[in-house]
Length: 301
Ligand code: HBI
Ligand code: FE
Image (cartoon, rainbow, N blue to C red; front, side, top):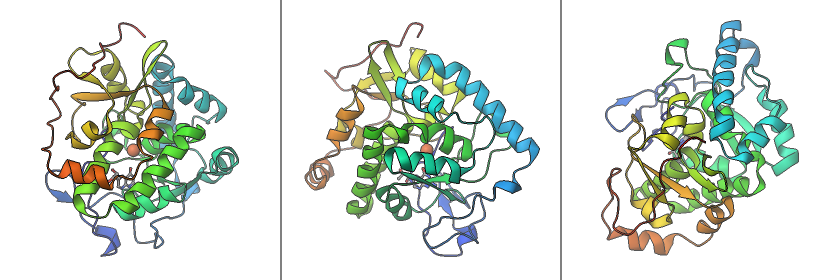
């Protein structure tokens, strides 16, 4: 699943057809925004899912869970087991109660992609927006916009991890302070290269924690095993300068040593960092800087 690039939903206007900028070209996001609340949350309408949708979700779940046992970081696997997530489409309210008892996060249903301001506000309030619709069978291997499988299977398990849960809220708070397009671009890159496509170095080798990889059957193997992409040690300002594409596998993955490190990286106020970055050019996704620490692809995790 390749999530989103610079997302600009024109907030508030004709909700149903608010155009979304996806790198190249504009098109309305999927989903029915007409019944969403002011904060873009809506009912999940659980009973509206068809038998076919439940069985598609089960197929996605089984395929991913089987291969992620080798590729995903332990906290993800432990949370998925603790979730004893049924293989069918989850009832968000039920899981939200379990999640709230663990890390005081809640799950809210949304019609699909929402404006950045709304997204940051929900995260800052420890509410994770889960898209309510599921992809079609034709999209089983590739989908551009996040659907309920990507959002729930990819993002929700790590919200049960206390440190990662705090990082996600700190990210949302940072987003609300960002203001201005340049800072939002830096933050979107930080989200992309950690929450969506992040790798973590462990005693058993590199493992996946990014939801965009965890929910992608093809990119899971590619991110750890393929010789083509670079795997570079995480550095906050390097990540904030690094461009990304939404419609291909990553050319660079960033590797953290721990969720603690990632959380600590977001503690300082970013104002001075944005100032410094203003005078520094963006870094293309396929670039390797002289002297930066890289990781070899895993042989056979
Ligand atoms: N909306 N529903 C939803 N899910 C996302 O992951 C999301 C979003 N809006 C904005 C957004 N992500 C990105 O701009 C982040 O980089 C902030
Ligand atoms: Fe996502």
